[in-house]
Length: 459
Image 1 (cartoon, rainbow, N blue to C red):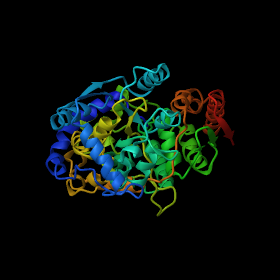
Image 2 (tube, rainbow, N blue to C red):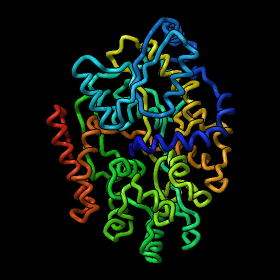
Image 3 (tube, helix red, strand yellow):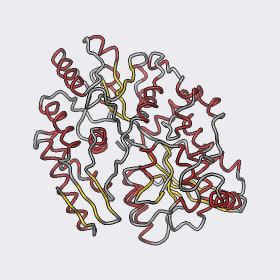
């Protein structure tokens, strides 16, 4: 799901502590961003020309405007300006999620006021990419960074044949569970969703005040679950042809699993990120979370009393023996097509996402997008005391490798997510079934897409 701003801020506090164990070793990771790709191999004339042009641009007096909300960005900007003193970066927090995207869309329509660079979550990226509002970074040779990221993460920024952003952070799905609670009720750590559902029933039957997890309806969670189940409910061809099918096999798998948990009252009716949610995670009445890898630092910051109780396991499998995960949350950084400073902006993106900036981000608590960082022993061998000394990054790094490729969002996902409470959300209040809610979400999304000029095929 899109990570709330308060979660991002909390992550920095915990990340500062967790990151100390990483910082020194991460500094040894490559910051050159010189990995090759098939389309523009490092060392080729085009790659060399692009690198030379970017290097020259970074030696010219330039001011870049950057819209970003991640707290780590301040330190990344400071490090960049120290290395390239002629380039100044004006950092603006234009808000998070819909707040930022509305401002950005308005600036694009007005033809003025847009930044050079914007932090954009993966689910919102197609909205700006397919309208031609984002620069194609391949023109600056940044496609040569492809091998530094997993296929699934790269899919998120390679839209309609154009590289429209560089990955900043990710959220490979995993199971965070309270070992103390699981041990108390003799619950096996589930390896399949069928086992997870059985644990949910057993736990709630043993203590009606305790639940396997909470859920009051979240579009990011639902799409992540459908994704991990092999679903492809959204398919865009070209810039205008969109297929929506929220009854596809992956969607049906999710609905079949989750509907009985909702109707049976086996999910805590507490909204994530609320004070009651943190209390539930602390006292064990919410025993697990299936969410993005960034949750580890959030738990440390938001639930300090849970130290030693929590562990991390792979996301349960839909088919036993077949690992298949998805992303939940995460963001990219894109250059606006209207920017007059595209070469300098490309240099900043390379520094931020494939160089020293990526190391700073990881050391301060963001879950890295860089495969180089995730494969490093300094990342894999960290054993947080909060998780009982478990090297949780080994689980999370593997989860990133197991993310299914080929997922895509709607080119109007921001709007679709905004109507989720009035469609799918009705299933959580007993006013609809989950399947009916998904169909209502599909129908209303399709209607909106048609109104916006898209050619919609809705199954």
